[in-house]
Amino acid sequence: MIAEDGTIRDIDVAKPVYPLLDKAGIASIASINELDPRNKPATQKGKPVSVKYTIPI
Image 1 (cartoon, rainbow, N blue to C red):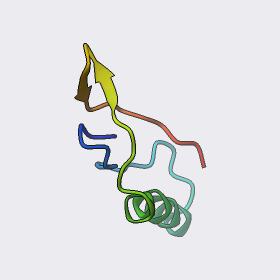
Image 2: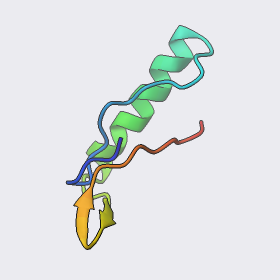
Image 3: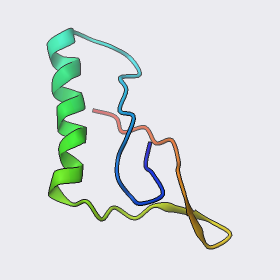
C-alpha cells in the first residue's frame, strides 16, 4: 500500500516462497521509506489517495 503521504505501508507477501526469502523481500521494500520517504502518491481528482501496489521481486 502506498499511502496518501507517499510512504509504503502494510507490506505483505502475495506468494510466499520461503520464510527467510519472504522476510528479506519485506525488509527490502520497507527500506524504500528510509532511502526516499518522498514517494509520489497516487491522485484522484487532484487529491492524494492510498493505492494498493504490487512490486514483483
